[in-house]
Length: 75
Image 1 (cartoon, helix red, strand yellow):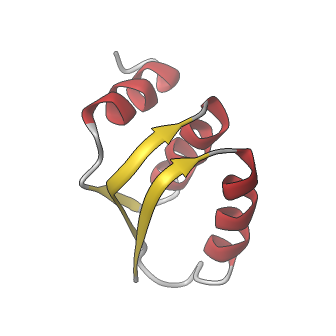
Image 2 (cartoon, rainbow, N blue to C red):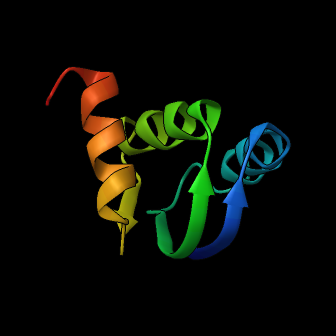
């Protein structure tokens, strides 16, 4: 299942996304970030967590990828 995210992702959106992800926990999940323009620290934590749990981030902006990697200590 692919979810296309767009615009800003902040704390309020993270709460909604967590609820949405809980409903599809038994299927492969892809988050398409091509149209994401801004994220906050909580969004980075969420994205890193769902990726670690098996979701795939596609079209991930380089600044988001770098931040996720830095938060995990991969930088």
